[in-house]
Length: 616
Ligand code: M6R
Image (tube, rainbow, N blue to C red; front, side, top):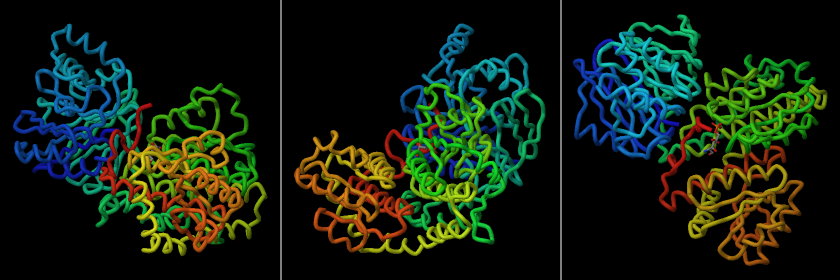
């Protein structure tokens, strides 16, 4: 949540590049935005409530002077309402120190009182202004800027990714992190910092990733990185395989639509470009680090995640049972922390996260590790906290996902989980080499079915159903078996970008309560493809219709029985049962997109949400 971009270059003006980087981060928070520059020994700041476009307009009206030392921020409010005055960057009361900060300083009230007693004045309600004054108070004791920042951070409890600029230290920036991501970009003519790599891809693809407690002083041509203990260190560099173009809309009106359409490519990128060996067997990249003997030793798997990733994890558990005959459980990561600390035993915990920075998932991972368990991360972002701290890793290689509503990341996660289940099935002797290859063959073949999903006839069916949904206030998504997590995902997608109320249910549960809601204004979206649940789903459709409810059915192409019962049919191709969630989820993503479009919603940046939830 919140985005940071900062730059220090040897000569010239870097304002435009920093602003361009900030725009790629708008998905992280969009309540307000701001920028600060150092010019001729003075710090100038512009801040504006609302989206970055408002800041841009402000910068047009009230230009900042050119500068090679720039910091900028886009905010998702925690302390203090969205307002110009609460937007970052924040200065100390003497206007010599300026800070952009992601995270929460938990003891800010206590620090604020102490600083106020010492004569500091405050003009905002934010914890970041307290931080700026705290750093200034240490700098005023004669400490160098880097030492002053570290001294201040010693007094702070909470999470931060921050960048500090000082009017008295004109050629440097100080960066630090604790439980909030921060990367350093290495350029030819300068160095950069950001909360996410996409913000800097137009400047560099070479990065250093700071660990918790580490800090760095960045100059244009050098840097000093200190460990949590304050010792100079040389962190490993990482070359990012994302391109700047991947972080652009590429002609699509929204990132979400672009990312939905990228899903056929994700199939190749997640599975076949990297995770299949020359004999056609699943073979993960080096970071996976689990041998077949180790895999065969696990007695159960536990999956943990949040939001869309949780729905992917639920499918992972089902794949595991089908292909490896191994029991598993799927838990909401935030709830795991409150469960009784049972023995880990011989379990592997799989933490699934697109960003690798979701606070609830990271806490759950660390708790498992604290209890002596092992964690396999499934993650899209190289160098993220999950990618670094998990004991084992599968990267999904989906490319940057910018739309707040997760689409292609889900697709990559489900694909990776299917591969994991095959590998486990092979390791446990449940699948022989040929069977493993057949399951992979099914996955490879899926690509041919995507054309049908994006055909004009299918898009027309989706649009008709979407037009109808724009007129309702609430709806129910039903699915059984493998389609249950898809129903949950469909409901989540619809509510987060259209703001319609939607619930996902296992269809068998409908008669145990939700059926009371059904009338002509309360439709049901039913996942009724030809799998082992088909007949039962048809009965559910009849029950809805008998109560006057409208039915939108996701059904296989040419299915007359469903067509006879449903008011709207969205056709999908028939594919092997285990892979059908990868096919049925696509029209649900498009359906929510079309409903949100019809209702005039802000699709890529829905209200109140942020792309990665880095606070619990
Ligand atoms: O980065 P993660 O996959 O860990 O994020 C988890 C959820 O916050 C995320 O899936 C969220 O629910 C999305 N907005 C769903 O579209």
